Amino acid sequence: MHIILMGPPGAGKGTQAEMLAKEYAIPHVSTGDIFRNAIKEGTEMGLKAKEYMDKGALVPDEVVVGIVKERLQMPDCAGGVLLDGFPRTLEQAEVLDEVLQELKMQIDAVINVEVAEDELVARLTGRRVCQKCNTTYHVKNNPPKVRNICDHCGGELYQRSDDTVETVKERLAVYNTQTMPIIDYYKRKGNYLSVDGSQPIDKVSEEIVEKLKQIKE
Ligand code: ADP
Ligand code: AMP
Image (tube, protein in one colour):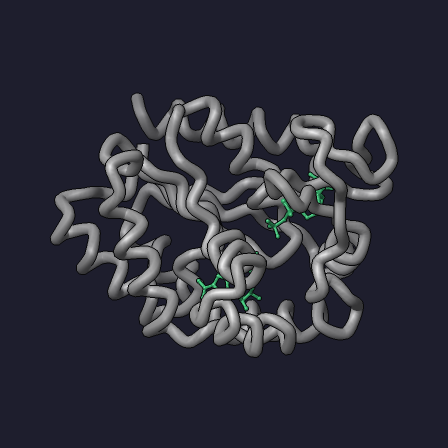
């Protein structure tokens, strides 16, 4: 299975990715996670990406595309992959098509998780993430069993520096202008699925799995 998970910031892509990666035994490739790990490690690429991320802007296409291309060539992606947060611009979508062709890979489904904007702000400002394993929680909607501690690995939770009201508003504006146009691009190509992301987490998962089954039939 080669899947692209789309949707605005806060739609629940990372949350659903955890389920999907298990269900289909494919690696979860999140460009946001790749950048945050690079920032943690203090690499040059991380420092460059941070400048853009802190403002709520997109990291330039030429940086992102190279990273994804390299990642797709790693052995664990041979049997499939779940792309989360990429592509985010029309140029990224077009380059991805070229890379997939080169690597003889095909996208089986593009899943667009749809949620209204006011709900997104509440989700993002209440989001907490495990610093060790990147599992995502929400202070109200999806809290860990023990406050601030990850259920899976015991790591401490933190609030992303770009999950402030101001930066969230900028990220949503960037999504509307730069990322929204690629929805039409994928609608035209086929295997496009829209999912109601405003439902509870397990209902969203059910809808995704059900719609993916229909595609595979
Ligand atoms: P994205 O990866 O699309 O930015 P996340 O998966 O990180 O989004 O989810 C954003 C926040 O919303 C997190 O705090 C998460 O726990 C919460 N969340 C995810 N899905 C739902 C849902 N269906 N209902 C309520 N809250 C959700
Ligand atoms: P995310 O974790 O998907 O919310 O992404 C966090 C931030 O990382 C974004 O606001 C961007 O600054 C950057 N980023 C992640 N993916 C991409 C991408 N495909 N293109 C450009 N910037 C990205």
